[in-house]
Length: 94
Image (tube, rainbow, N blue to C red; front, side, top):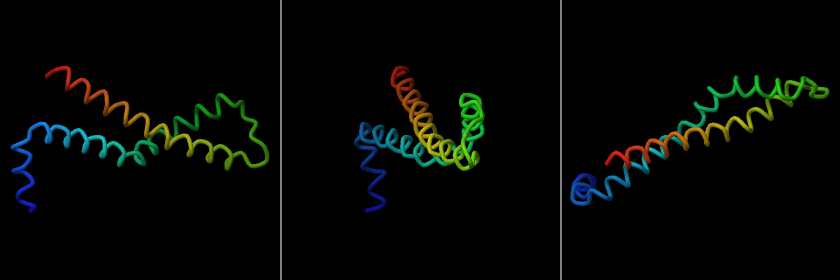
């Protein structure tokens, strides 16, 4: 069965194209942790700049909790926006 899969995609190029797009989106979601890690220093900087520096008794826990929560969502959104832009751009070229 494993050797029949590539053959079935050759007979159905539309299925192969949809599978490729699905895999690219999956890869983008898999890399969310790496993207969040890259975006975290910028998120901390913007958070501290826009909140004026008053964070209560334990500023580090407050800042990092808020930043890490928002960093994951920023990673998801950034990755999916980039992937969708790539998919749409490729469709417009063809």
